[in-house]
Length: 289
Ligand SMILES: [Zn+2]
Image (cartoon, rainbow, N blue to C red; front, side, top):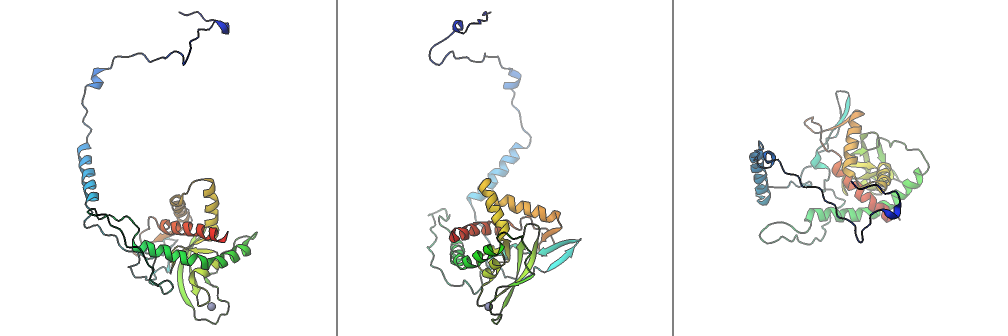
């Protein structure tokens, strides 16, 4: 027993890093260390994982379905199911690239495929076309976006009319598109009239909505929701998936459900579109500055 020394000068000292203390060794219980335990179900789990790995290494028969190949059938007419406002929405339809606005062929580097493995190293043609379509679209939206920002600055937000247009002359021939619009509190279908003097995307941005696809979008997101998300993500992390999921829950609790043609609830109706809108709205804001 070492006596407690009250005077600081009489405390035991050592040079360098001091004394090295270790925990005392304790004999192990052989009943715990020498018994082999068989976890039930581990072999079948291993076989399943090996089969999954083999399927991933050998992707024959795996085919991606092209989003632009499906026919753009307009089917989002509102229908009432169990007191909930629901819209049918085919997830494959949201980027119908068969419109006449951006039909020009874009030169694209051929996809480089590594020998033997069949894996691509560069983006495919469809992704490249989508990217260049956004790139040509963004400069055409700057003016409409600046006007909308100036118009709504220091003003309470109002809901857009169910039929929107931005035609100055009212004389040109108009085409009508049904677009599902995502707001803070709800989503609903809005008829958008495009014409010669303002394209579909310009009409949307003029009324504070941002398209989720560069040509013939079937969904648009409120610019104010995107601006709020932008401010939030400056303070937190980039959480598009969380936003898409939270909006779906919020809408469902308020009685808005997105269903497909068979009447089933769509699991992730907004994730893809919100991701596109967030990314390209950010680029539009950079363009404005
Ligand atoms: Zn016009």
